[in-house]
Image 1: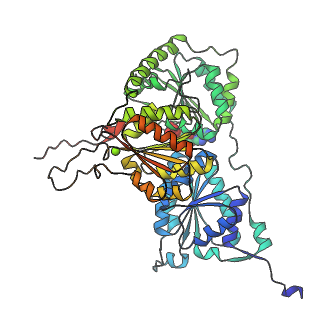
Image 2 (image 1 turned 90 degrees about the vertical axis):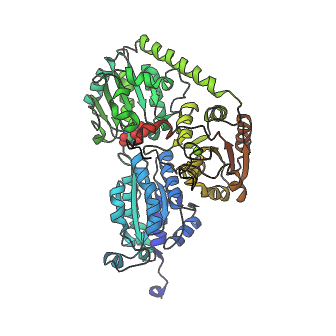
Image 3 (image 1 turned 60 degrees about the horizontal axis):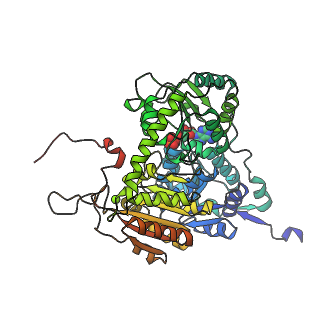
Length: 569
Ligand code: ADP
Ligand code: MG
């Protein structure tokens, strides 16, 4: 009889997968284990790309940068307690950087966790995640999975993007539901990141100020890169004729060799500008909080700030003209104001900048061209600068101290969202996670330029790169240590605290997993090896020997090191 016919069923596993797919989530980055092993397997079977890492922090970093590149939340899947905590570092970093990401972690049973009875990997994960991300949710019933995933997605991408934690207790996955009822419970998020238009009065205030400027400057931040309003931003710069500087991950939004780029005259324009338009860039430590010596005479500056987050305004200094809204909408509104009434930019200002820029560029060029052995940072980066010039659609991942600071200045970028680096925290360890997600999300070749120390934080993922056969070329700037390879233990007992095994061969790590390893000692060899890797698309690691004495303490930010006034004998 009909009543005896088997009912069509679904369960928690399938509802999570269906909810993600319904919302266009095509990739999951994670590490399998109890209780989410089967979730990963089933997701793969259902057509989601599941990329399994060796450590959750790297999977989390991959998810975060996938979010930055696509404006869809990157998803990271982990096991409970320790796996969750490993992923949480990446979630906090994503939130700090305003990258949309969802960390989904399995957890142990509420009944036991809440009574602290000692479950397998017991931990109150929701409570721990909350202060470190934008929003955190837990789903206890299978019929709430649809709404839980929807809330997570909207929270991640709307307004200021950020990290969201979604807690899924083990029991949830096997909860069974009538299939039709399950399907009805799913929610497709409509307009997940709605446009937010600035008030006309705010636009007028900003335009009036901008028109009064004698020495205007635009600062493009990674929020501008994230917004994917590339055409509007380019038109705003070009039609207004206002010089701009890019923050590091905004490089390439307009090509670094653009005539209006003031990147090579950065200190001059920060000091001497009178009206500064911040486009998706915060006045945090990376911009000296908008005050102090770097910004010239006190009171000499007026700021116009474009940001989707109202609370960002006046965070460090007074913002004379706040423009709260999404960058696409706000820049379009400003663009409409660059009409026949626009006075243009005084030639005196643009000529001053050009002179400074030309001088700095030729000074730098002199340091780059040599084919030295051993290499220093400049000569090695000179070779890589040429690589990116010839392959502007390649993605550059960059971390380290000197390796980061010098590459940022030396390697020009030509296209938006091609430079991915240590971001707001200046964190080490993003390298392999970012490189893997960049290759997967864009299909473009990836060049990861890594200090030997920075690489160590995620180096085991070279196995992942080989396993998925990704077009990633890693270049390790190997100077035998952190900052330099020359520190000694004053007592003579151990190696110095900042040095590694001398003359390590990181290229052998790649060979262990079937990738290509190359050892180079000159810029010519380096250039040739990178070209070969990028032509072949094969996973490659190039051990680039850098003079161990090259490199300065903490790169450009040595001044942040506290100094001891006590001298002990
Ligand atoms: P950078 O480090 O490059 O200076 P920040 O991360 O400090 O950049 O600043 C990025 C800013 O961009 C954040 O304040 C964030 O709120 C803002 N933002 C991100 N996406 C958008 C968007 N679509 N529209 C407007 N502002 C945005
Ligand atoms: Mg080093």
